[in-house]
Image 1 (tube, rainbow, N blue to C red):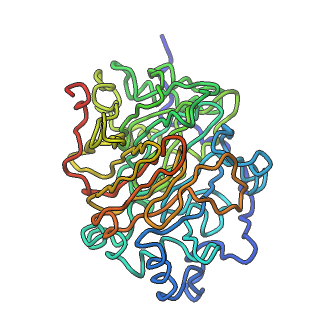
Image 2: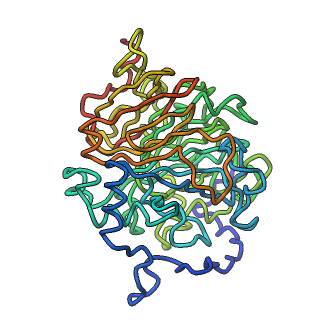
Length: 448
């Protein structure tokens, strides 16, 4: 007779935590002491001057984020000698965050890791988070400010040499137990950054129909026995540049090795459910970092974090896959604006994104419903008073001309994109919640 599985797995051994380093001249965290000065505090006059000088458009410095458990894919144009600029112990830089007011939840991070800085006077003058906290609806619009009191979304480029562990992001109720917010996210694979697919340009999504909760519980029981086999219960989809996916919270996914543009909710919660990737072990801490301490070894709780019906959905691709859809322009217009991220999560539009391509010699005014973060992926030109230029290589501390934040009024009044270069000017821009109620629905690309 087969032995019954243990009712509770032994507590996996945890590695000793390194001391949390503090960057020179910076506080370890924004709330380290109740009487500590606000490290972001800046005069409102300085913020307003930058806003006026840019015509409602703020230039942003690159925001680099390392991950200790991943290997950089080397396609973010960051100079090779700067891939470990935070120190080898912090891991390589494989993410660049855009228009972010969300700090990175990395062990050993300084208080401002993950936060975007506004460039004014030729230097990093203040964080976008501080500007929004002071000017609120003037920057992000009355609806978002009144409801969230912050810019509640961000986007990033993710660039890894290989796949990352099968993981999920908690929903709001689960994340609230540890003082955080849930995290839905989306993917778009920019062709300009994906001339090579690196080691594994496929992503595992969800679980195969017929998988049981006991199957996944047994995977967690095997955590310290090498590969726990969770991918045996999932399916990988080949990734195609120029397409994307919408991923709700509590759905397992193991992103592949294409460079990915990821509009998402402003949170950095996650739980890794795969114990080993490409011969590298994944610490148990990365499974339970956003779980209440008393639940850190409760295997049933960890399995129940998953949205089971969504994970074993037999029509998973139909319900999550995205292809671009034209929003404006097209043949003969000299430009084309396309939806690349769209669709609702639990009935709500939480974020959306567009890809704008302007042909050489064309000047076009683009009006949007609300504020957005923008990154340039090809060509050069202008957006209003701000120069746009796609760099070939970026040093760690370099202030580039490829990223801006367009404020609410400027977006609604319309901004002029002027391509005075010799190749197409291509920009990606993402929007906050409920900004684009007329965006396509999931699956609409099949009916176009």
